[in-house]
Amino acid sequence: MRIGVAGKGGSGKTTVAGTLARVLGRRDGQVLALDSDTNPMLGVSLGLGPEVTDLLVAVRQGLESGDTEHQPTIEGILETFGRAGPDGVRLVVVNRIDQIDPGCP
Amino acid sequence: MTPPLRVAVAGKGGAGKSLIAGTMARLLARRGHRVLVLDSDPMPGVAITLGLGPLGEPMLAEAVEKDADGRWRLKKGIGAARAVNRFAFTAPDGVRLLQSGKATADGLATIMGSISGFNYVAHRLAADGVLRAWSIVGDLPAGTRQAAFGWAPYAHRFLVIVEQTWPSALTARRVIRLARSRGDVDVWLVANKVDDRNALTVIEERVGEKVAACVPDDAAARDADRDGVALLDRSPDAAAVRAISALTERLIDSTR
Image 1 (cartoon, rainbow over the protein chains, first blue to last red):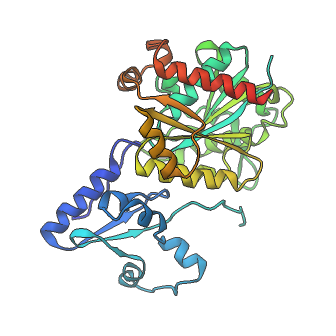
Image 2: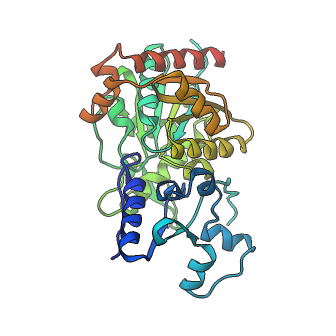
Image 3: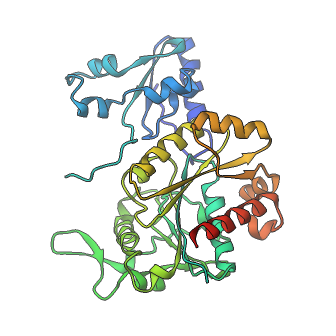
């Protein structure tokens, strides 16, 4: 099952996505939760807590900073950047924008 | 006449950015300011809180053309002031509203020209002979993206709207950090939907910042939102309107 959750800000996308992921995790034991919001909050609704959520490294920034070796496979990326959450849900943050963009080409 | 205000309103989705931006814009206009609202959210919002109802069309689509390199620009003879004059909607109290354009079922592709024209205008407001005397209220989309990419170059002041939830507080932290890293911007943290003293303490702890102004939790604001009408028209004496009015006065005072 592959589900995308969309809607207006504040309407409850993240709450629905996080709860859905955990319910599915309890059933199947294996769920990937992908936070594609550039202001990522899915960790909060999955139960990782706000402070942990605020410190998760996103795939894009992790690779761009050069601190992490580029993983050639999807499994490698999920392994390197994924964070295990409750009920067998693995959370991956795609891209977080919290630095001023220097505007360099 | 007091000096013009140039503010950008930011924060998490649902925190109340459009309510505060739209209401403040109309109150400023009632105080005699020429007011331009800049709406760069691809989702509907401030048009409703201004009292215009939802507006669909990409407003600047007719104002732009592609140059030889395929980049969008305003058509020859159309500067920032003329673009506003011709293409901005007129809201109640004489507020002008310029939208970057709303996403459709086709996504953003069909409104890219309008978005580019909007960006051009936003970057030239401060230097424009006519518009620099106007007050500007920018309603940014939810989250951090536009603050990070400099979509509000006109803003002297960021109003960061926050409510008492963790995601809202984390977003406020991130937006404040971004706004401050520009250096020349003053940040006011505005707490919305505040129901008691304790909410304020919780918000300040979570954001790590003093709250500069409070807007109370207000059933009238929820009703107006549900029905898609401006709170200022539906319930002009609502507690939230009074609070936004007081905030507007303080912004005016601190700009003298």
